[in-house]
Image (cartoon, rainbow, N blue to C red; front, side, top):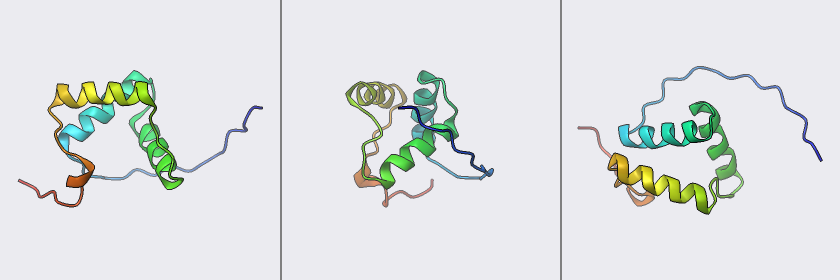
Length: 84
């Protein structure tokens, strides 16, 4: 069963994001050969439905990238971040 592609309208945004989080996201998007915006859309759409956006292999890659970029933040930190 093939799904029909849906036409959408994208807008440019000026989102600020923690540097190491962005580095990991860019590494994931490069691994999957997709744009950063496409990756973020996919993560958000999965999250809206309560579905995990990554399987075991994806999570293992993310852990490698977290270590490589020194990303020690967790979901528990998400509402406790302040700017330098």
